[in-house]
Length: 542
Ligand SMILES: C[S@@+](CC[C@H](N)C(=O)[O-])C[C@H]1O[C@@H](n2cnc3c(N)ncnc32)[C@H](O)[C@@H]1O
Image (spheres, rainbow, N blue to C red):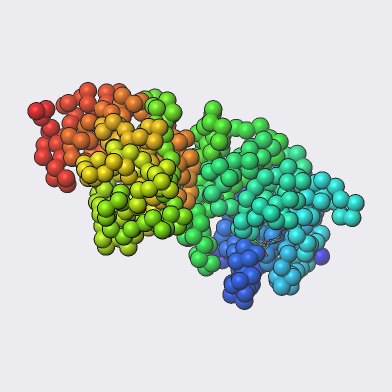
């Protein structure tokens, strides 16, 4: 067997960007990925990590004084992540004399590739690799909770993983096994991370590439609590482009790479971003932990601030109110169309009331009815539908889903009762979030103020720090901070006078309010009169 130094010398001779064995493994990755049955690929969440990302992930482990390393690769695929880790060791980054590798891979068809990868390194390095074909979830739970018939797993010093992405059904064997280990989660990826963390020894390090969805939303709250109780977040890397990290595999998730250290004191977190896996435009900064997990918010959303500069929302002491404090609620539109199908009408008719879908909102106001919309425009008002309808009035509504091409995640509009002069009540479809006061409309200026505030670039940027997907849930909106009711009304009065101000003006207005601490209605000199898109000069009070 060649020594580590010898192997390192061999590697140093290489001038390619990716060192020789990794580039061979990269070839196997493409072959295995193309050969895989698409159905199985999706069932087992088989998306293999490109070499550059694997190398980056391996680079995040902080070297220590340890002689011995026990590495866990849970859901190892063809072994790209282990390979990157071993490459880093071979390049002299760690002091290990020997590395034991446990590579869990449930799909036997991948074992020949995995074996080939590990064998390549075994010829050069002092490693003891084991391929485990059993289900990682069951093996880990058995080891953590004890099972007479199962082999206990070691406590690992390092874990590197790109876990499978797959929903866990509530009645599945995985779900009950996880419960046994005190882990309540909804996806295999978070289950793999929670279990790997539990299998680490104290101060063990874990690096994982996972979808960003765990950062917010109620379903991942137990998972967030689980990891935050047991580990410190040391590093986070965000790929700015949703589709570039796994471009060969067409993965459209926004991914983060996270580095956790078990049992460590939580200090600042180093956050990096890059557009894609070339890491060419990587930016790095250090964030205090209270910018990552905001204190006092029980949901424990994990924010990924993309720069050390505080955003307007963070800087402004005036944007500190909860929706509850302002006396407003936000709910998902109560009309679920497929449940009330028999009451829906394509166009308004006697006995119907307006039904509003996201498609009814353009230029931030309601356009109704819209025959070309391909959705019902009305809902019958009767004993069955009454409880799903809101009294006609002013509301601020936000689209729950945006497409990935869209620039903004949060798009807010105002519903005005004068668009529906003959109607007592309105139906809001389930793809909208609706701001209301105890299921009634808001004061007009407040509805406009909320929509204007939510449409600022600063709010959108702030929102993206904890929400990596295209869905805007009522819970997310409920947990954000807002200006006071008085200031929202002032902003709304300004917006109403400007007649739908364009984006730049809305953003300027928030900046002005932040800098001067004077909200627009109180600062007439800042008012600028806009007529739709046209700039008409300073606004003069009538
Ligand atoms: C996203 S792939 C990543 C593979 C590899 N770690 C990489 O980075 O290229 C996840 C792997 O986990 C495997 N897998 C899925 N469910 C598993 C389970 N319950 N136990 C062990 N492996 C599993 C899949 O077959 C797949 O190869």
